[in-house]
Image 1 (cartoon, rainbow, N blue to C red):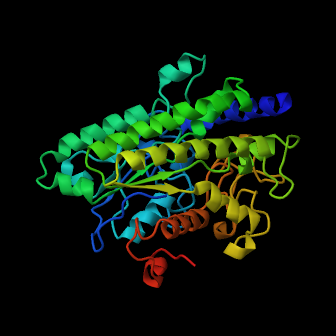
Image 2 (cartoon, helix red, strand yellow):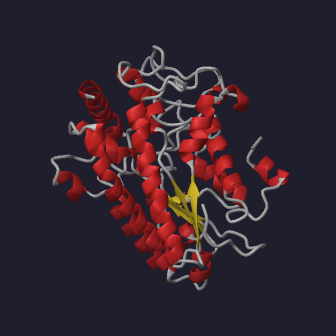
Length: 380
């Protein structure tokens, strides 16, 4: 484990310039239309705030080939195209949520807001500084919750604010990946990082509780991804404890599974305390793990652990030649790849995860998971 931890420190430290520069619950009434989507999280859900924040505006997602598949230009999304939140919004028939830093008025936020920022953590700077650690970017869930309060004040001028809250979908997460990477950057071992889990889950609980208090009736909470299957980590640690079936790093996936068990335990408690609110879980771990275990079943190529855009080697990942840097290029067909840049997912993988999430949470999230609904966002 000592050598493994050293590799993780190297990964997290190397990411600093990249990031720094850069269910269950009550069901909805049938027939109710969603007003919009309000979302919180990190780069897996950020649809443009990173382009407007000084610490991240010059990051990789600000330049080609990011956004090439769907938007035909960089939008601040850490992918070749749409993210899970985009597909869910389309499936529900509402606009992509407006990045918080791109809006100014109540009118900008009536149909949803995205508070997520690439590199964001669940925990605040005080938590990390007390342990001799430093976050990658100056945005945590506390900041995003403050932005949410600002939006509530703006919407106070809107006569139907209560209905907007009650008829919108709130997506709280994914969050936590960067918290663990910050820990590894400070020479924290994977075993020691397990102690972060209850704190991160507590931060998620705080935001979920806050949106319910504001009137949310449908809340979706995504879990942790399989960290050990990330090409960035695999490329820098090829000597650790790998799962023989998947090829992923077992200690990191064990940490992700611990995180998800704790998160689900917390959600069960919130469901008991809030029986009139649908509090749902999005199993990102399971959706991604399915792609890695059976890529051809879902239309992906046989090497699901290799990145589409990046450097070279078994995982096509090189931190000195990160996607978008001079001399790098994207693969010919991103839809055949699970990983876009070694850190984030392709539009095709995001579509799969969104489809799996909607299917698993129907009818609480979507009244009828029909063939028409599936076709709307291209689910197979």
